[in-house]
Length: 148
Image (cartoon, rainbow, N blue to C red; front, side, top):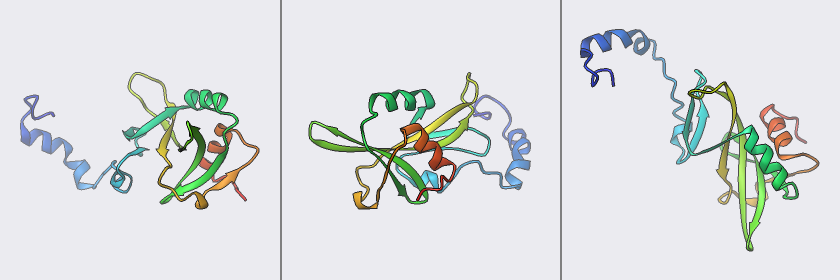
């Protein structure tokens, strides 16, 4: 980008050479191998090639769908809380995991959550979560939770 803006190529490479010599990589190559992904890098920047939500959206969803059962499951190393839904007889499953606090342009740091489609997960691998709201289950899961 800097070179296309007219800066000399040698100057740009010289400026960034300390970073490249230390192999400073803020891209999570494991996360980016997924078809859809969202994560926060170590600089607090949100990398989103999927779906994310804010805490306010999670709260709204929780109020609207309070009667839907919750499940805990895994996709690889990532743990999610799944919300089981039915739409005209079709079963749907949405998974949520807290990513953390992200720096978003023009906004204060904001809690963000990844949303995934749970349709491909094996239902027998999901564990039912009782007596928890969606938000509290996500928070418990993000904190290592002590699930039984």
